Amino acid sequence: MERPQRKRPAHQPVFNMGNRSEIVFVTVCIGSKRRLLDNESAHALIKQAWLKSDHWLVGRYVIMPDHIHLFCAPARYDQLSVKRWIAYWKSIVTRGWPNPKDKPLWQRDGWDIQLRRGESYSAKWRYISENPVRAGLAQRADEWLYQGELNQFAWHD
Image (cartoon, rainbow, N blue to C red; front, side, top):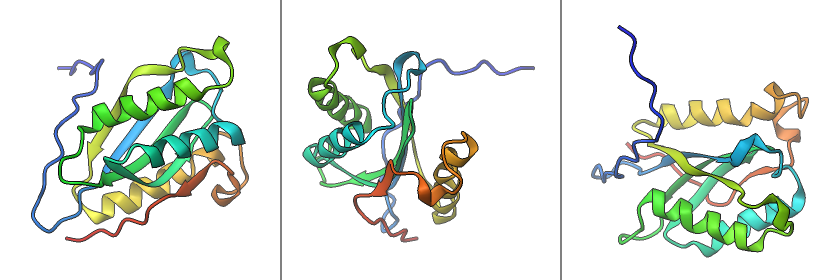
């Protein structure tokens, strides 16, 4: 029996699991798969929005031409939900976007999943850091200009 494909992300709440790390993996896409993000001005605008939105900290990230992968962790105890935080920083980027003809920029929602183990954090990072290589945009992952790490996350079991 074939399972139906999910059309909208589930957006499960982030659970505090005692002394374990609370790291969430997020993917956000540009609407209609347009290639808008692989340039220095978009990269700078997105990083500024993440720094301004203080409920979650961004760790490692890769900005592809039409989507973003990132890891985030709560910055405070009374943080917004991940879904609301994503909507907030997407609105900051949209307001600062230089070309009005590109708007609306984003797909309506994003995908997020809380990581359960340190191994999944490492494995997901290895996979997403290779996205530019698989897409033919770079020879090696470390050559891709639109990636980085704003905050270093340590996994604690």
